Image (tube, rainbow, N blue to C red; front, side, top):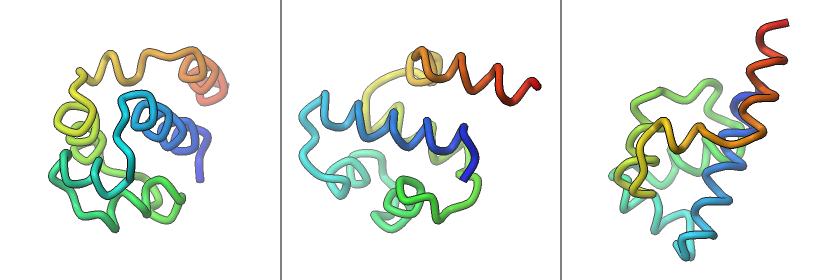
Length: 84
C-alpha cells in the first residue's frame, strides 16, 4: 500500500467519524459504492483505488469537493515523498 493510499484511507475514516457516519457500510451506501469496495480500499486490498471511487466517497458520501478532501497536512507530506 503506497503512502498516498494509506493517507487517503486514514482521511476517509477520520472524516467518516467526524461527520457521525457510524459505519463503513453507511458511508458506502451514501457514496453509492459496494461495501466491499470501501472495505478493500480502507484495508489496503484494492491496490490503487480509482479516482472515480474516491470522488464518490468525497462528494456523495462525505458531502465535500475533491479539493477539500485532499486538503490536509499529511497530504503535503505525501507530495514531498512522491516527488523525491
